[in-house]
Image (tube, rainbow, N blue to C red; front, side, top):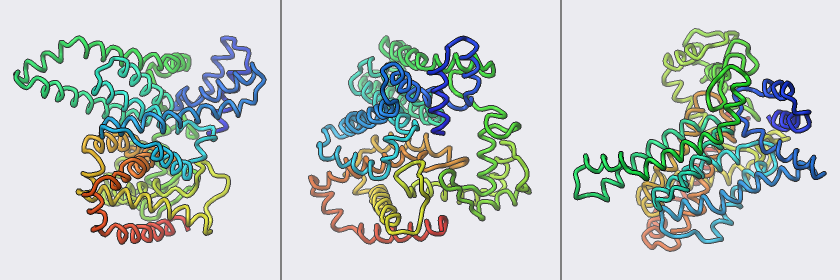
Length: 441
């Protein structure tokens, strides 16, 4: 992937920019990858070429900028909107430190995961800011941010749609609550005819489409799809007869529960294909793969649980590690800290008292929507650790911003002291090590 992003972008930068040359370059770009994946690498190389500067150094500006606005503005702003107070600086430092321990590779890898997740979260935060402050500029920012995220990872589209539906519902509820004295019909009529909401919708659509213009042009040059986003088709990857989605489903049904950097096969999951009567040599269509899931619902559910556990069981702080996992102390310590954070997060989510003290209901609704929309669909197909980056950010956000509230809340501190938190986390860590070894050893 990194080679593709860097050297495909280089073709555009170093070429002669004639129409025929550009058309040739565009047709060589995989149809399922949006132009946002190549933009940063291309711009860094173009500036480096013009200014005689090492393009790799310039490229580092993009992940650094993404990280700075994500950790320095959007996540703290999200907390401020729901809690009515700002986070302390040391909490931001703690958040960055935890992220850097587990994901420092995203700061220099020629990948777009960090930029994609930053713009995805930014789109949701901008919508919340519009709901709270009523400024049209936040809708503009949301449209731009969501469109950028989809130009990088089209798998976010389900999450974007769900977020927009929930946002519209909250906006209508807010207007009804604000106009309690009137009938719901009159309030809904006001909303429908309201000047601001019309301007907001138009602004969002225009800003969203502006970012899509390069992708629209790319799709037209390819002459295969008239859509506004990157797309999938037969022959999109290594199989000439199957789409990329069908290839991923085919591998999943036949037992692959994790992709690069570790292709983990699972015998129990492979039984899905056996129950459906498929052989290993068959290239399954989407309908055949879905039939396989339907024929073995229990095994399918177990597969998704295993994938969820696998995606949250990162073994390396580099999304594309140079060295593989080994049975060494450093790897076990790395995993232990990861399990500790995950166990703490799950304990809070499962404890109603702690959950109510530390996190708001609307806050959790937004986070679970954002995470589920981005990660849940992938549990049926191809999964890698970096695909779960948004889930890890949710976990780190709770740990760095919400858990410290126990220091200032007597009820929360009392609940924590009287709880079986240490027993739960200790058993959770041991259980995770056993499950992880059963898959990776």
